[in-house]
Amino acid sequence: MELAGARVLVAGATGVLGGDLARALAGAGARVALTGRDDGRLQALAGELGGAPARAADAVDVHSVRAAVDAAARALGGLDAVVVAWGVVAFGPAAEADDAVTEELFAVNTLAPMSLVRAALPHLADGGAVVLLSAIVADAPTLGMAEYSASKAALSAWASVLRRELRSRSVAVLDVRPPHVDTGLVDRALAGTPPRLPAGHDRDEVVTAVLDGLREGAREVVLDPREKRLVRR
Ligand SMILES: NC(=O)c1ccc[n+]([C@@H]2O[C@H](COP(=O)([O-])OP(=O)(O)OC[C@H]3O[C@@H](n4cnc5c(N)ncnc54)[C@H](OP(=O)(O)O)[C@@H]3O)[C@@H](O)[C@H]2O)c1
Image (cartoon, rainbow, N blue to C red):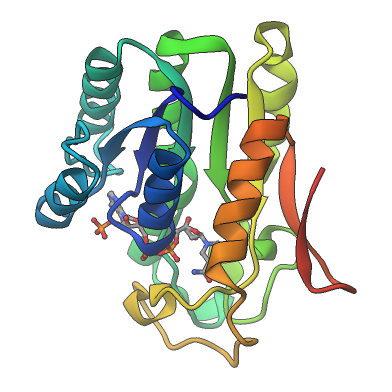
């Protein structure tokens, strides 16, 4: 996909990786629309990006998600790509997980991206792209992070089917599974304290890999465990 002029909705633009991705996409010449939960930070980013269309939505409210998608498509005259960077994390032993926390993890990390993509597909041009921020734990479920790992593994499984089903429309589905990155996500955990985590991976490398993956129509961005760098395939 050619990023210059592409119409891209970034969900979770108020987050660290979502904000980085929105700025990088705008820097590459894309016309971005934004959604996020915190309206103050959302409007600040919209202003920074020269008045990008922006509408706040709560990921767990399907009506507000649909309204944000429709507003973005109206403002941009359709969509060429959606990037979903919503996410929450929680820590603790699986046997002790709180049911309400587990529900929120799956609502934000798994069900909300599915809802957003379903809402966006009627607006999405053939040859367009869907980018989903999953995580390395989808491949390597991690002690103390059973529910987070499961929520991301479910999203990646869904993405792999979506990709095949959208082949007839030439819509690329990019499943991004980064390792730990120092964004403060773990300090905003819904519950628990994090286990010992590896040093944070380079944020800029994640953003560059996503943009290159979009340009190339890649299927996934994952860590090469031997070389400790992100690869696209
Ligand atoms: N950081 C890492 O180590 C890492 C590693 C692998 C994958 N990831 C994934 O990358 C994505 C971005 O993470 P990040 O590190 O950039 O974290 P972040 O800065 O905390 O961003 C999380 C985003 O999710 C949004 N969000 C959370 N709950 C929401 C809700 N109910 N409704 C609407 N938005 C909601 C936040 O919105 P507000 O700020 O407006 O509340 C924020 O925009 C997530 O999917 C995460 O799982 C992160």
